[in-house]
Length: 105
Image (cartoon, rainbow, N blue to C red):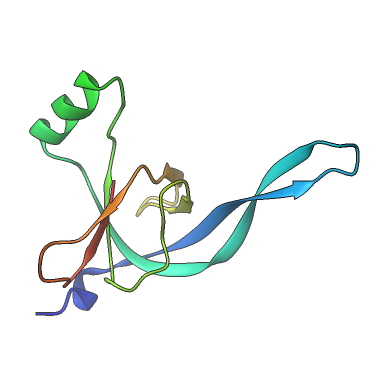
């Protein structure tokens, strides 16, 4: 089974990168890592309730190829079908026991 045919969007992957600011401190910027094909879905009611119970907000599930270079803390940026800009902060990335896809929450 391949998830590739379901991945109908392209999202930019931006990763936080920390650099010295030259004055003894550091600054963090989001650096473009590349793009990934993805499918963006609404989470289930159960997923939303579990997130709310832990003080978090779970707005979308993002499905990716299992080898996609996406990690916790990354930002995924793209546009929806209506051309509206969207930004997603990745809280975690999980795979089923047989890695046919990755799911970024």
